[in-house]
Length: 290
Image: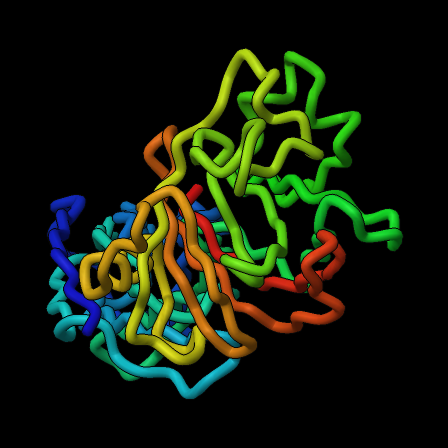
């Protein structure tokens, strides 16, 4: 539903003018082209005039070229000139373009239309087919993922001190955990029995403490905003330990919460080549709160 709060003010001017031939209605809207995210409120103003008394103003919206639907109630006008104001709430849904149109009519049946375009930007980032490789995989892909910008780092670039704080998760495969995404702070990275030392994470000076959760969702179709991602997390359960999402399977969607306070979802698109020697590759699709 689109909820609108509409106010209008008239430039009070008595209609003392006699009826003229070829009367016209003129209308213009401001702002004309703007950007917004889901849930934003935008104030629009329509300036309109006619040689006859103005009668009504009607607002409609069209989302991504779809059918126009009325927004709010028809507004009654009473003067020769009017300033019609509307507070438009951007609906949560598919990002794209919303066309907001105002049609103004006068008492003689003349009318004019004016439109504004709202470019709707989602409040989350989307990264598709992110390829990660386990520590001994020869594919050349890195094991380290930065969810803020979708970057995959190699062992060499991830170990640079300025990059360590950017890494939210690390992919590996071993005989115990199988296909796994783990936080740099997870206890699996270290030396000794059952530890993974090949990535040298144990030598880092900064290790993000990302937490992982199961979810009940099977695809991204229900995700339209960052709030939906948070809902998916709240509906799941924490992995044990919370810093390690292991035994991952193709088609599974897990949630994560970064140390910087961002919610995210990772869909396991492909998993192949995993073995006890540390080979293996993982492809994930990611949505993460901006």
